Amino acid sequence: MIQKWSRYQVLQQFFDFPKKAFLIRELSRNTKLAATAIRIHLKALLKEGLIAKEVGGLYHSFKAQIDSPLYKTLKWQNLVLRLQQSGLLVSLEKSLYPTCVLLFGSASRGEDTEMSDIDIFVQAKLQKIDMNKFEKELNRKINILFESNLNILGPELLNNLSNGIVLYGYLKVL
Image (cartoon, rainbow, N blue to C red):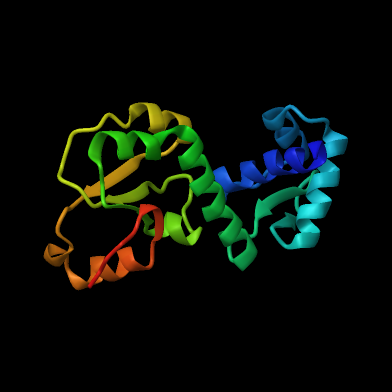
């Protein structure tokens, strides 16, 4: 169990910074795990196709395999888990009483980068919500789109929402 948690900590670095190439010592510093443990986890992640080894310079670096379907799936699932753990969804449910809360855009496809924002659709009336706490915890800007009537939305946005991930309630398109 501890080994899987450690591997998750290493993988979390690649989820948070998908375009960055990491050295073993850097991962060791960031995760507070021993370099030998990092090597073991990197070997397993390489075998699963979640990361790639970049040969060059004095030391090898490791980078996220952002085109891997497994990587994308685990990345969006990780984000959903972190949204849940941050308390954002509970806060939205208690303050807005929405019909539906959706994650959409690049984050819902696992294609977001460290510079991307998190797009969330809330089917409720527009209200002011302080996102600073959640943005700080998730290390990302959160963009919330409010709309209580789906008929007002354009077909492209509606299609994008229907391909998103329902975090709360249900999306009734018709």
